[in-house]
Length: 328
Image 1 (tube, rainbow, N blue to C red):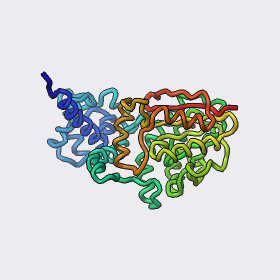
Image 2: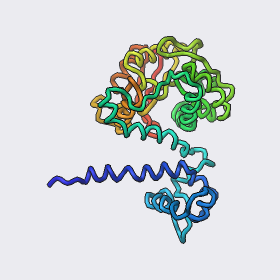
Image 3: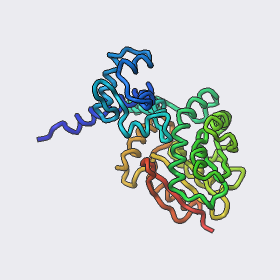
Image 4: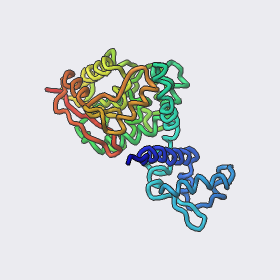
């Protein structure tokens, strides 16, 4: 007999994620990084009602992000490593981005009915305040991704790196923690390029060169040894995605490398990996064009651009990475 177990499980999985995001927004895990505390002590610091806060604390304990003993709460090992702002792998600031992405996901049916993105985000929006706000949401994750990429790639022989379409460019800040010798450039649209230097300075990278440009129209003004395109191709229509990779190749020195990364990648059968499949729905709500392109599409564009030795891997956070080198 058919049962509803799958449906019930999918519905039940939403609430724990929402509880985690609430804990991130309240910075509970950073507070508990200072030591165990009761609901009343935490509530006094946050200036909220302790009885109401205790509901969230016990919910977080039930899903393994907190531990509780004799009325005192402490971080689990995973929360201590990734959700405490005092730790180098901190991901707690993602709560602002998650609010935007998950809010967009709730509008999928509306986007389909209206035949337009119900939560439209326009990267070309000239409003500097909007550009700065969005870039700040992405900046902490950029640093973390840069660290992961620095671990995955041997950049000892690389002199110059360009981050194309990298928001505020904080990927480069994370990259240089391990490879401080790198000369780094961010290429971005004018609205983002205008706010990037301030955000880069906040993340300890005030000397990153910032170049205004549109990679779908022209290559970088300079030539580099490595081009990084993180979560860029996926927000473009196919013709612009192709042009972006062609122009990225033209931004490289002979024998230069490209690293194309993002969660917006699906297998050729379009059934996996899950992050690519479901991010495709998020894109439907945010962008007029763009999608989780298939591995075959990425390989076709990169081959046309002159890249050889194309390799697809996954970084430690599950992000898909395509690497290749220009043919000599």
